[in-house]
Length: 173
Image (cartoon, rainbow, N blue to C red; front, top):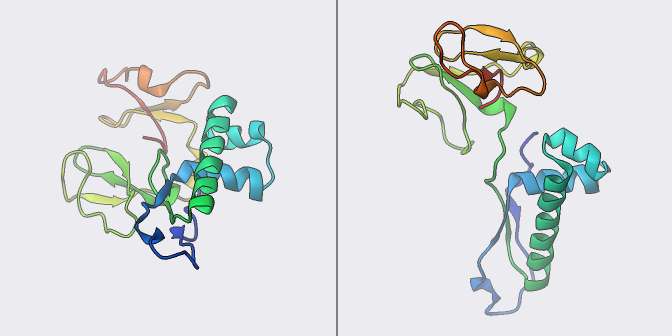
């Protein structure tokens, strides 16, 4: 998923006194659900697969987005697009000290330290085709052991055979 090209919308022509209404926050996953169904014209089943959520979960996200937008239109409220449970592939970082992979939810701010240990030894995590090609890999963030991901098995439920620490899926938190 790519972030939206705007951070929100403001109504114009509001009557006096309506300016003190609180903005409505549209989460990134709600924005993505609207984009997939109403702009890209996918059905709920296809869109849920793209977002890697169940179809009923997708439908709840989509319904929430439509309710929020309707409320903003009817009440003349501002819409802010932010937050939610979404990670943008292009904004990942890796800590050399603890091996943590993390994203930058505040894209306007520069990442200077690790989100987990606070170390200053962070670098951009690869987001090229080579990285996405290895997304079907489970790895150990402690010792670096890797193995091919088995679909249907959660990597974080498996322990590394080398150091007995939980495994992670390549390219995911």
